[in-house]
Image 1: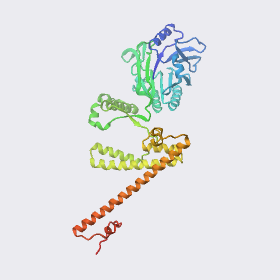
Image 2: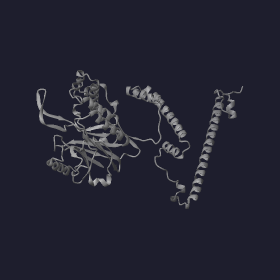
Image 3: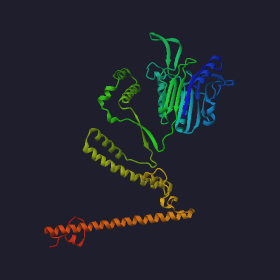
Image 4: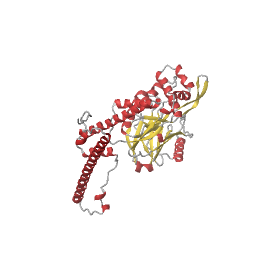
Length: 471
């Protein structure tokens, strides 16, 4: 399943008839599932605004006007059941019920003027709440923060933008685009010695990490109704594989420090010497190193099985694993083998301790105990009836009581078979010991050596490993 969103600045569309016509043409051409309209400036008393084939959702009004609208395609309403879960005069949050789980769609518009700190605080509070409640969430809108100037020391909103990005990072939201200009001023302005149009990235798209952000495509369209160009985002929902979780990893063993230095762009990295802001220096260094790593060792997605029971590894076990990997990287074979065997023993001990603690915390709950048993045996699904008591074996079992009696007899017989097998193995072991003693006696007699008294009597050696000899 895919979600197709579009954010569009219409700038007082209710009064500009030509813009309303252009809006309808644009929606007919691309037919997005959801549309975020910003700067609409519709009076609250005016209920005549409508868009064909779309349901219009309103946020709280600001000074008697709606400056933000969220449109939902009518044909999706019966299947997705869009419900407003949070709204203010700055944003509107809608929950969708999809076959793959609930998804939050967010439209945001923050004016250029106003109490910026207070408005961002409201938006950040909603991001925190939604990030903790949903696995999948996407948001589009005009925040009037120039993403392309976050490292520009002359940008007077740089601190506010950095604060905004840090909060979204803490809420696990990731900026997905766009990376090309979405705003171009109509007039030209003087900047230093140059006179040109102002360009910026004011429309942002964010997605919640771990919710399919790898399947997002963001594009800036050429058809512009106002000084903002429309932004289109396609979000593909994929069902997670049962019992698996995906982890992004890099193979750092395959690179060396010299190869990493060769890939780092020294010209871009030298910019840090002219900066006074420590945070900005850190951002540039991280960006250049990550871009070099993307060329040498691109991140790969690895699927890992989810454990139904936890595995606790102590800090000394994790430290031993690090030492083992370091020994393998340096080619120290003897040390690697010793650490490998040590880690195996420590992990085995950690499993036993974890299972013992899990059993103790289960407090006799049979469901939890069986979860642990199936996990230990590697069984992720339920086991069917034994063949001996199933209908395929030809046995005619009628009723639950008869089935229970047959099951009881089956496991009692199986227990007797296991005991018999243990007794037979013990008898074979005794026969092997007796044969070994006879062979030892024969060798001593052939060599003319006095036969140990313990061998003649069939007794083993004493606890110290010594044997008595006849004089």
